[in-house]
Length: 306
Image: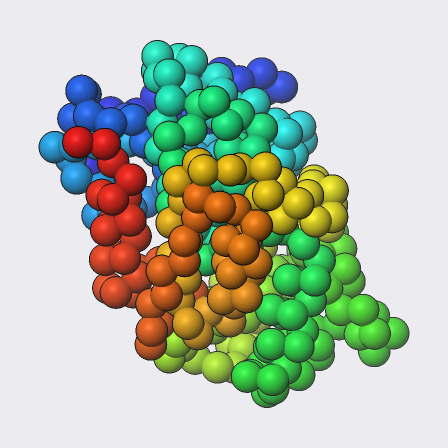
């Protein structure tokens, strides 16, 4: 990422998270939370902010991006990530900040705001995700089989027949298996399926053959978190939304997001008096869709004082 140099912050447990401050030093403080889990921050995310008005902290979560050790899953839970964000805030001398995140970043943003409401001036969430098994079952099960039936069959074919009755836990277990002959095809299949679900018009709607090549980080961190229910009590974030009161929130939601469908954002907004949903038509899950980016940028501007 261009601009100010980042740094590693020691957060304990053998982890150092990568932090990059960006924008006007006197601007309104913003915390940006990437998705995944495990994606890391990238330069395109700077387009969501005004460098003359915002002072953004881009934080690579434990095991993601430039954080060290790379891809580390030990001492890596939602509670650890929330504690890390408080360490970053204190290190930067920030009293309160606007929190912005999409998909898993929206999950973490909600968890942070519910744990530390006094530290948040507002929330901008894109593609609201609550970290529940029901959402994952829909995205990678019912939704996938409905909108991409061939891809769903190909994903199932990665598993032996006796593991297909409940495929998601079986896939996560295979992704986390130490044997490359087991985890490589499972991880790559998961990665390509997720990419197809992320685009309104995906570049490919079938798995490559053979399933080999460089291994991305996200399937491993996602399997780790999803296997443990995102380290959240089931339904906790939706229940917590009713306690967020008048804290301002804008939930940017693409109409045709197959990974994080609109119903979740609307359920959250129905319980959170300070929130409203902004729907982007003719868009899917992708954070870089021009109209989605524009809507997030407008939401950030709307919740920036002055």
